[in-house]
Image 1 (cartoon, rainbow, N blue to C red):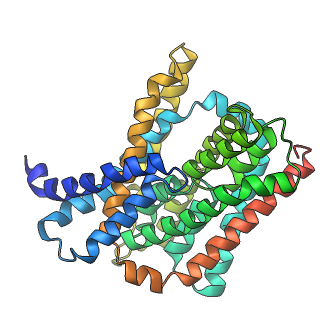
Image 2: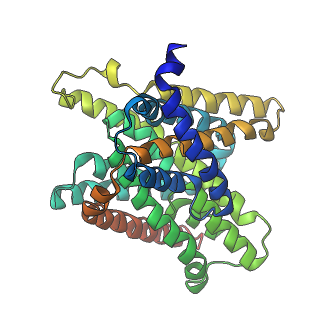
Image 3: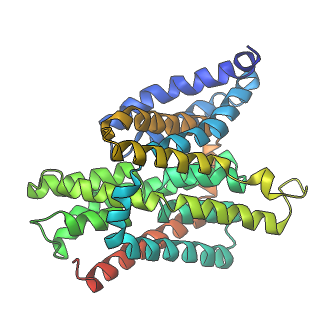
Length: 343
């Protein structure tokens, strides 16, 4: 009962924003419900600065429910399928991730961009957009404004990719009789799942390929998602090595270890074993949808804790970083596909 007394108002406010954002995201997949929820939260907070009794529930939603979303995301991963796809796409995935992380770190040093923003933009660009940011934020103790800024940057380049890449792919000569090459390209060069889906589905409709491109792109994208595991663990160990938290207290690996990532792995294993035993993948579809809704719910809370005016004023350098990561990932994906004879 104490939980509902303490968190009920804030949680209900987040739900009230998340539900219409969820349906709006379904109607406009190129944007996605998570971005719409963040924007809705930002607008509401312009008129609702003193949140009072709503604050605990908003904080709970932005922190805990975000972690639950990542755990449930694991139920969408069939490790057998990912291993099979990974044989072909893994070199591209590893190189694009490394490229993004190296560039974000280099620009962090050159432009003096805040460390948390640099990490979130680098991880979000290289792995899987909002999901990677959701998994990384608790480990590095990123605040809600940093998360909102990183999500906004990733969203901007996601939209550009979803609009530009199908025409771009045709112009540079991707095979239009098969969705394989463009599917790998979309799965490695586009950040967030919603935009990967929109981009690949557009290619399928352009060339009447059914869902061949979409199936390939989504599987490659889910393979990238597994990189959440080593990235978050490395970040946790790095924080322990530095030995200090934001408030100056010593940090132990036990206190910051991302245990929710272990549950994420467990969920993936459960799905893999169940499908191997003959259970249809569709059985897990509602859990995957709940995961996506939880991300939208958490983004509504993050929007409520974000000062949009401050976000715009401080967004220049992170936006340049996001652009450099996006262009570099695109280039590396194309070069490696060409070298491997895929394109």
